Image (cartoon, rainbow, N blue to C red; front, side):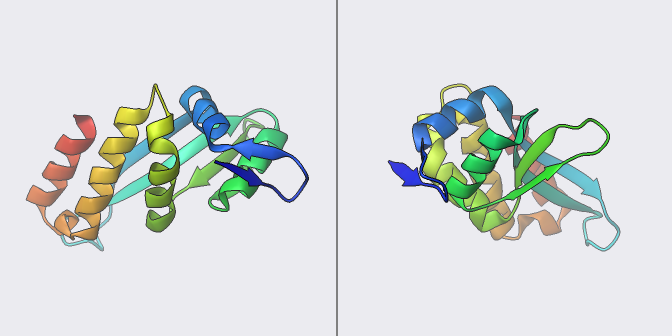
Length: 135
């Protein structure tokens, strides 16, 4: 499947998957937060990192999700996808096309299911999420 971006270039999902395998990462973090009953919130995101903006901009436009920004301290560009519905869609679109990070995307999908089920509201639920994520 190929998408037409705002310009006239085509960026395929296979290209995005290969780029993600090399330059991307999946992040699941447990952030201490007293506003939550279990004392932590679970932060999930997919991140692409690149020195130049152009490729990330095309990926961003093609996928239609995430936030593209440049961090001032290191001058590197980031494309972060963090909305749960966007993460689920990203896994559906890219998961079976990846080679290196397929397992991480499958574990992310399971974590997202657990979060949707509300298990993160208890210490046992957080432990279940941790077990899934750490494999």
